[in-house]
Every structure is written in C-alpha cells, then in structure tokens.
Length: 200
Image 1 (cartoon, rainbow, N blue to C red):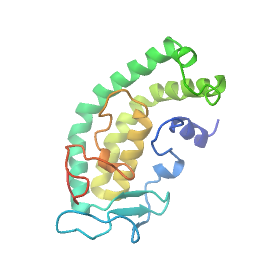
Image 2: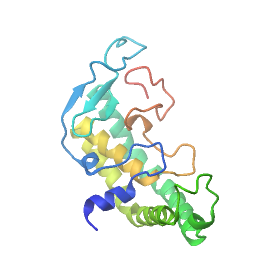
Image 3: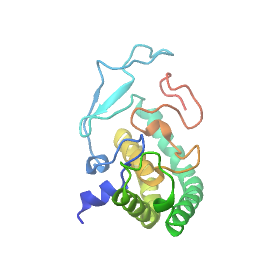
C-alpha cells in the first residue's frame, strides 16, 4: 500500500465532504482570487471576491485577510490542545465501538446494492486507520495552526485537511473547531455571518 492509497483511505466515501488527496497536504501553494465567483454580501468589502482558489487543488477558501487568518490560527494554537484531545477520545471510542460491534456488516443501509461487503470492509478499514492516526493528527493540527502564523493560507488549508481526515462522519453536530477553514464553508466556529469578511 503506497502513501496515496493511505490518504485515499482517510477520504470520505459516503460524506458530502470534499475527498482528500495528497495535494491537500502540500505545504506551499499558489492562490488566486475567484474573479467570476461569489462576492461578499455584507460590510465594507461587499462586492469583493468571496473565495480565493488554491491552484493546486482547485478548491475555494474564504477570501479573508491574512491578519484575520493569523488571529484565527493563534486562537487555534490555544484551543486545539483543549478541544481536539476530548473530541478525539469521543471519536476513537465511537469508531472502536463500531469496529468491535461489527456494525459495518449488520447496519441497515437503504441502498445495499451500492454498499456491498467490499465497501463495508473498506469503511471499517478507514475507521481503523483513523483510530491509529489520531495522535499524529492532533500533533499535526497544532503544527498546522503554528504554520498558519507564517503562511496563513497554506496553514489554514492544512488545518482544514487534517480536521476533515480526522472527523469525517463524526456523530457530534459541531465536529470541527474551524469550519470556516474548510473549502467553501457554510459557517464560522463562533457563529459569525458567513457573508461578512473576517467574521468569526
């Protein structure tokens, strides 16, 4: 099994999340404004491009100022060690119970033709891999937040990628500490308006 297959195992097969690729973990990227896309609707920046495009993956991230992204990364440096170990324990317990109970093989799936034995085994393998990589992911989240102080757009992208890899299909309603760091986000962690630039 090569590295790209391992990353693909971490990706979401049944989720609306953006699947992961090796390019999502690239530490230095090129960014450009999404000129023809959505625009900010509120505040003094109304009319500016709402997203910047990562030319490596083609995904759009919020067009926030580097100062705001750095402040969010600074907040994550302090929040991540408090929040992620707790949610990770819950996540590991949840996935372990699913593995031990063999729920992948007895759970009722509406569309069983698309979710055959091989797909169920694949999902069990992904969750086992997520359990094994949890300690590395927690350290990686902290390092990504620190990296975000130096290279805001790239640090934000890596932080979001690690959160997607760690918490895909997690049962808690608020499974991400920085939802606004995700590609094409729909919310901010502290409830700020997604249509206002530099909101929290």
